[in-house]
Every structure is written in C-alpha cells, then in structure tokens.
Amino acid sequence: MPTQTATFDYVIVGAGSAGCVLANRLSADPGVRVALLEAGGKDTSLLIKMPAGAGELFKNKGPHNWGFETAPQTHMDGRRLWWPRGKGWGGSSSINGMIYIRGHARDYDQWRQLGLAGWGYRDVLPYFKRSEHLESGDDAWHGGDGPLWVSHARSGHPLYRAFVKAGREAGHPYTKDFNGHQQEGVGPYQLTIRDGERWSASAGYLRPIVGVRPNLTVISSAHTTKVLFDKGRAVGVQYAAGRGKPAMEVRAEREVIVCAGAVQSPQILMLSGIGPAEQLRANGIPVIVDRADVGRNLQDHLDVCVIHECTQPITVYSGQRGWRRPLVGLDYMLRKQGIGRLNHLEAGGFLKTRPELDRPDVQLHFVNAIMMDHARVTVEKDGFTVHACQLRPESRGEVRLASADPFADPIIDPNYLATELDRRTMRDSVRMVRDILGQPAMDPYRGPEMRPGPELKSDAELDAFIRRTGETIYHPVGSCRMGADEGAVLDAELRVRGVTGLRVVDASAMPLLVGGNTNAPTIMMAEKASDMILGRPALAPDDAPIAEDSPSRAA
Image (cartoon, rainbow, N blue to C red):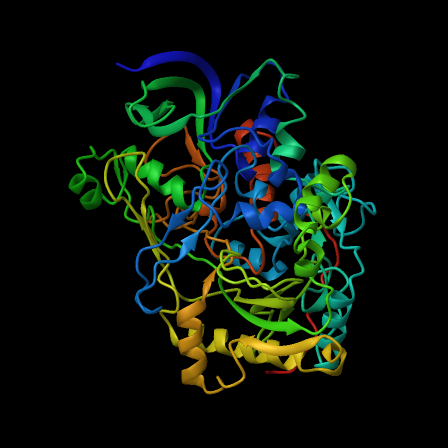
C-alpha cells in the first residue's frame, strides 16, 4: 500500500516553467501549504547555469533531459525525431536557448475569439509584465521588477550585425523589440540571461524561496504515477522515486495542479483515468472521465536549417577548438567570462512568406555555429546556421499511452507536414533565408552552402530535404487544450472538465500555438492561473498601443 507522507493545500506536479511560478505565487501566503513534486533533481549543473551549455543539454538524454523520440513520422520518410524536454528544477527553461519571445498580439486575440474570455492580448499583457524584469526598465510593453530577468543581446558579434543588415537589404523591416508594438522584421533577441547566467523559471521563482518559506515543500526525484480521486474530486498524487521504488502519496485539500508539459501532462491525466475511454480500457486503466481530446491537438514548430561555412575564424568553432575548449568552462567558472556566458543565437527575425498574411508565419534564429541534428553532429569548421520554423502549422498530432506503466515514455506523434500549406511554408522559408544570406552584408563571411546545398532548388528537392532533415525547435503545445466547447479538456480557468479540484497549467493548455518561443507564454499562463486559483480578480487589461505589422515583400 502507498505511504501517505503529508497533506497540503495545493499539490503541484512538475517544477518546470509553470510549476515554479505557481509554487512561488501560491506559497506567498504563509497560511497556504504547497507541495511541489519534480521527477528530476536540482538545477545545480554548470551546464545549466552557463548559457553556452545549452547545446550539451538538449542533445543528450540524461538527468536534465527526458530525451523523448517521436513515433515514425508519416510525412517525413518514417523518421523518428529527437524531442528534448527539460527534467529537473526549471524544466525546459533550464535547457532551452534562453530566447524571450511572447508571440504575436493577434495570437492571444485568437484565443479570445475561440470563446476564452480573459485570454486576449490586452488581458494577458499585464501578466507578461508582472513576470518580467527587463534590464533596461519597464515601458508600455515590458515589466521592470518581475522575477524573470530579461536582458538585451549585447555581444556585438559581426555575424549578428551582418545578418540583420542583410535582412534589411532583402527588404525586411528592422525590429528593435520583437515583444513591442511590431513583431515583423529582423533584429536582436531579448534573452533570459542575467549577468552571464541562465535565468530560468527556477532561478527567478523557485530557488529564491526554497528554504525561506516553511510552507513550501519541494520533493525531487518524485515521478508522478497518477492523480488520486475520491468521488470525482482530485484529492492527491501518487508518486515514486523510480521504477520498482515504493509508492508514496501526498494529499491536496484544495487542488492538484498538473504542470508536466505537453508530453507528460496528458500522459498523467490518462494514467489517472481521464482521457479517451477506448484507449484507457485497452491499457487496463479504469475510466473516470471519457475525454477524447486528452492528448490530441498536439502542435509544434518544425524547424529546418540553412547552413554555410564561414570564411573567417570568428564562430564558436574557432573560439573553442583544440586547447581552447576546456578553458571555456574554466573561464566561466572562475570569472564568468568568455564565450561560455553567451547563448550564441542573439539575432533572428519574424517574416511573412505571403504579403497578405496578417502576421509573420516564419521565425528565424541565427546561430553563430554549424548546428546539425540538435548539435549531435560535430562539424570541425567555422560556419553559421539559420533555423527557420513555421509558426502556425495546420498539422495536428497527438500523445498516446504506450502502456499503463507510468515510467514508460508515451507515444508522441506530431504528424508534421500533413498539409500542403505546411510543406509550402517550410520550403518558402528556406528560400527566404537563402535570399537574406545572399545579400551584400554577408559577402565577407559567406562560404559555401552546406545545407540544403546549392544544387537543391525545385519544390520537390526542397520538400525532400525538409523531410530528411527537419527537426523540432522545442515548442510542443495543445495536448490538454482549454476551450469554450464541451469537448475541450480544460475550461477557460484551466480546470479539467468532468472532475473537481484539478487543473492543468502549462503549454499543453494552449488551444493554438503562438507565433514564437513558448517559455515566456507558459510563464504568463501560470502567473494568470495563480490569480484564478487564489480567487483574486484578474489584473486590469493593459492599454499598451498595438501597431499594425508593416507590409512585407513575399519570398
């Protein structure tokens, strides 16, 4: 029989981007008892703190990375794609690329138009601002005293400057702040880096309060096996330290809040009896709520890379080749200096593949290195990479149970490139990147094109290249979608339909994928959810001006 360890007011499953926020906000009242369960451990690794360590973290399965793989992808030559997801304090915010992007204002207005009152852009902007500490101070679009430190890219590396200039030469506007009044254009990124150190959700929200607030209990190495119910109400969580380890329980007098992400939140719901009844019965799981959409509506940004050799020895490769490599970590440990304090993707863009679109449909990340297959392929030469991803894919996938074993990875099927629009947008993005990299500003640095290779030009050739090399850019959402319709897994306050005392707060709740990186939106959702959970009025809608995106030339 499981051992009951303690009773709390709130039990939070997962110490990722959302879980860290909720642990902080809910435990701010000393009279509220909060337990935070995390399957991984603390975020003390040098690779986590050092921004340049990200490449090592997301290419290897290990203590900080679940290292999932997808099911064979029907429209990508049957390939299984590598899916890194963060494990441990901070979750994916402890292994990501540290890009601070919120998405387009119209993304959230579209949520509101789906019937989700309170989720329009003016409604969510105050929560973005509450979470943020922009190093240059607050303004109409930014917060200046929140827990999440946001800095401006500042290395001044010539390749970033050349890329931005080339984008302007190609006819795209310059955008100083992708999170301000205009997203479309090329420009510098804002970063979740503080004084050369990754500033994850754990760094901002969790670590400052652990050991300080006696009403917060963090239980690491706690792999959730299921949510416990009594007469349709969530009353606790069962967990274990590993396969074959004794089952433990924590009880929740008010709510259980699942924050395990787009892969594991639907898995936990299904293991607990909430999901498609046929699938649950096939795995021998008693059905509590027949909810067909649990695990469905999975969306992700598929990414493809254009890679060039660099004619000058100024990239990450030259900065850490040979005897320099061990010195990178040593210099960072001793002085927090050198290339270890950089994330090496400080510039990018948001572009339209068609001028009639109401917002950008492609995002670019410029990397000062050759990056193939999540940095799992090593190329010994100087070069640079431009990642291009489609921001609003039509394709929809799902997460399914592989078995009733809570320690078995679920089946992840993103169903990439299932529609012609998705295929067209991806190949158009390659052509747009080629156009930018072919501009005069890149002439001093542009060596031969390594990928796709200059010989690949036709639609069929580019489609084949994308099928062969496309990968996730780490933004899965939607598998426990909130919605106004009865088929939605969650209502507009992130409560699981069909039971009481249970919410899901993380990227899985997004009904539609936003146009950008998903860490900042997930933190925003948790900030907003904390007010819902505590019964507080929502922050007043923000009246920051929103300008129309400028016209864009088509590729």
